[in-house]
Image (cartoon, rainbow, N blue to C red):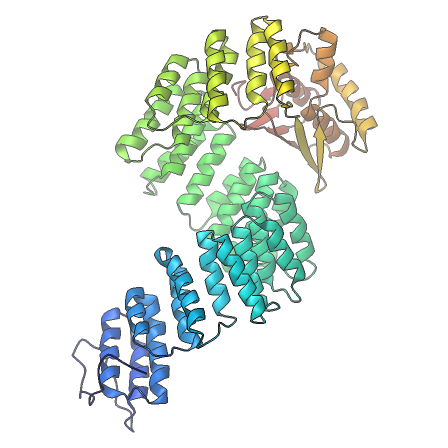
Amino acid sequence: MALATAPRPPPLLLPSKAINIPNPPSFDPHSRILNSLKQCTHISQLKQIHALTLRSTSPYHPKTFFLYSQLLHFSSFVDLNYALQLFNQIQNPNSFMWNTLIRACANDVNNKEQAMRLYFEMLEQALVSPDKHTFPFVLKGCAYLFDVSEGIQVHAHALKHGFGSDVYVNNSLIHFYASCGFLDLAEKVFVKMPERSLVSWNVLLEGFVQFGKFNSALNLFREMRNTFDPDGYTLQSILTACAGLGAFSLGAWVHAYLLKKCDFNLSIDVFINNSLVDMYCKCGSLELAHQVFKRMPKRDLTSWNHMIRGFAMHGRAEAAIRCFDKMIRTERFRPNSITFTGVLSACNHKGMVSEGRLYFDMMVIDYKIKPALEHYGCLVDLLARAGFIDEALGLVSTMPMRPDAVIWRSLLDACSKKNTSVELSEELARQVVESDRDIGSGVYVLLSRVYASASRWDDVGLVRKLMTDKGIKKEPGCSSIEINGVAHELFAGDTSHPQTKEIYQMLKVIDEKVESVGYSPDYSQAPMIDELNETKQHSLKLHSERLAIALGLLKLQPGMPIRIFKNLRVCNDCHEVTKLISRVFNVEIIVRDRARFHHFKDGFCSCSDYW
């Protein structure tokens, strides 16, 4: 080993600020230095120990080599630059030393690329071979950098060096492929593993959840339960999947499992409780979400953000604002951009224009938070839907960033409801198309609605012809309902469900009862063609949420709420019918559409008919 300074006799004592090193009975500098390292807490102490090593040990002594590996190990945690300098002084470092430095670089946000350079330098020197500890560290760097090509090379190296069956290497490969979005390759590695640990399942679960493959995550979880009991990481991923799917029953089961089976520390873990709050909010049970939130022994900013956003999406704007005020005034948390997205969304869902302007200014002036596109989007939608379309257009024109298709579409949606000029709607539709060439059918449907409201049926036909020519199909309405833990998906006009006959018989019962209390169809959002009212009414009756409600009335126990999740916004007619159904059948109906939650009870909706 070649070191920078020749060894000298050891000093009698280190400086007074150094660590107190007791003299062992027999003089052994290596033992003294190792004892010093165990007490070391700061880089300045490490440098003193390094200096002592240079002066008091022989570079050719076998214990010196081990001593330098420990110096490198400690310095990699406290000062990476110093560790790199120390590493460069060592001749022929062993695999432990390479791994120590690669791991340190892979764990450092600013040195992920350095981890890759070290790995390839290790291969070029060819003095030591990578081992089963090397590959996980390198793959972690590849995953962070989304460096697919080099990650695939590392995968090939692992196979070449005989680590194709190693569980730790394979876990890292799953994480790498999943992080880079190659879920099929991650699953392929998982399937081929001869042995799996709980981490193997958790990493793939997290990958599915990260990319919105919630059903795949739940299926994998059910399979995993045959071999392993879930831990905190498993439960957090599954709660996120339940939130995404609205799988209330499974989410509640996870909560119960957590309380009964897991240790006390996990049941009070802030991350787990945050996931529970988020899950209950997104599954339509705001009361349970708030109950978990209030009982949390410790809350962080994410806890408050979840609760504020939960109140907002359920139309409880006043509660969201009270939660925000308590957060900043009583608990002294400083809000971030996510907090204000929730607050502005709450104002938007309730049409609270003056409050929305106030909180937007508070965000910018008081908290110096630079508004992002989503903040402008909330305020533009709030203004436009409340009828302040000119102010909304003025805000769009002064935004520091280019408006996206969502903002233009929210303006177009407001114009279609406020019966503004057809020319303005046409211009907004053009902006939507120019902002996103890969748009769906929504903008064409909105524009056809504008033409239909103006009785310009020829233009409605032209819009539909344009959709046909471009191969654009109207996104079908789809509603899901969970019954006894099983999710049922129903599309508009669906006849494929095993209980279709019973569902349609129940629809007839529903129609008779709501008509007896004065229901009159609203054709404004039926298919925008000049067709007979009978045809339009039949189309309205077969909207997906009505089929789901009928199934819920058939299969759920009396007194249980009907929870429905729809991919599109609820139309005016279905909204009115659902209010009547809740009164006539004395049932609570909770509907989550694309924009928010609606709670129907006793003939009223929580949105107060503003959505």
